[in-house]
Length: 328
Image 1: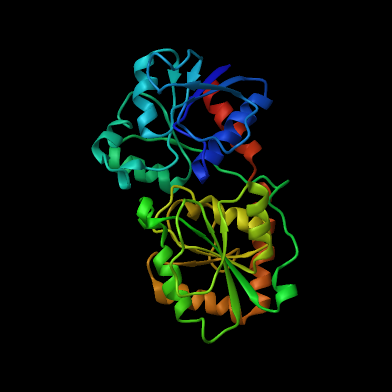
Image 2: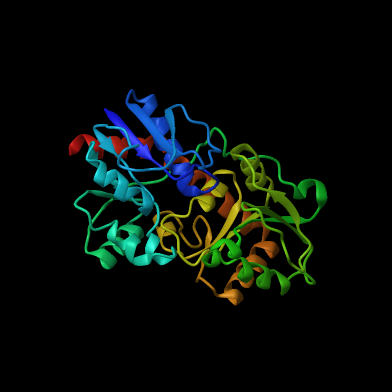
């Protein structure tokens, strides 16, 4: 099959990670895959698929294929108007919840094209908001990269908490960064721990909590940060899937996450992680405190999470997408 994937960029983030794994996986399975990206679009992920740069995504610049897989709402219109192949809309998040043009974003779901979603919660949200059903496929973890490593605390004597901070000033207000630091502020004078934060946007950390700050990291560096931590905290208000907790589990780290929607497909409270309500600073603080105090529980959750991720592979994701396309 010739498969065209128009994207705005392949920068840091779970959505871009999904797309590059999909493009590479379909290429490895013998399909002709072409990723089309504007000149201004960033590319931080390595591609084995063909990469074509264009001035902008338009019906004229999108090449022909058996299938065209737009993903962000701004790529759907050009792909549909191009009429150069069967359009299958991949939704990596329900954009009307956060983009500045919610009505335009919603219209991208109403074209007569099949939709792929990335969790059962995400599928139900699209159905509820648009009346359109979709087919849910799973995300995955690259276990060649995301695997356990020695804990930083074995050398420092202090437990380590890892956090990915997305910048509210760049629109990521639903990621819960302020809640995280408010929860830590209630613990910092009572327990000996250290905090490592990675910044995925060009922003500066302003917090009264002493932190080790790491700028936007590669997959290998992220795996190291996950693996060397004793606790990983992820407290978004909503996510179509939420990949970082699954990656942290694969790295053998105890996870605290909010019940943010898409992670219900894999987050099992008390079994492979701790789950707290979104925006509940008190319960977030209590969960962090619980894992700081109870080493056996922390290690049990870490081991259970690592074992659970064995089935969550990108190969499975690619197979699901390939099977769906072949069924049309």
